[in-house]
Image (tube, rainbow, N blue to C red; front, side, top):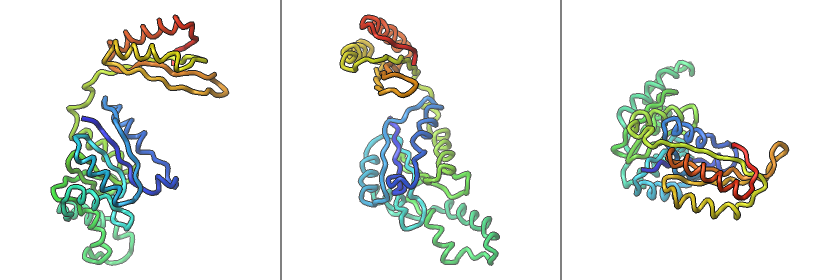
Length: 261
């Protein structure tokens, strides 16, 4: 079962906002011994969101989706999820209660009488309209919930809300997956080397040790570091140790200059 991330919002693609979700999700997963397998960015385009969700719903992945679950004209995620699943949206009764609690708590700031049936407050209830059968994801910041359906977890685009909600999803629904795969990683910086020279050795290591991956990250260098390749192995710890030791022997055979990464 892979883990994916869909980040929705024109503001990300236009550069008005910098995405912070990708590194944070990677961090949340790593803390639990998990790893992100894929990520996609999508603008506020209904057809593209629907197509993306139809594809992801058809798979077996765990998918986190951020953004677009509000009730303004540029929020489409709730509706697109319903269309992708061929399900109507309906007001979740618990979501209604939570939204009205939030309205009641914040209404004194307006200085006007509270009317939960006003057009403005009825419109706010649209934030609780989810595909039928969806479950709620609690929002500890302002009570306005996200929703979960078919291993997909939809949260707001605001990091202050999204991140604790995603952590709750992991800790509530997937603790049985935590730290199931022992993982190790070892690497060196190889200076002034050509990847083409190192590739046969890398391929031989992956063929010999099926539970590891070899990675090669070239760098042109900077004022502090010369041109180099970060060369390493990651995966099952026992095989990583053996493959890394063999890799160092191979580098010595090339007469390569290297140091711990």
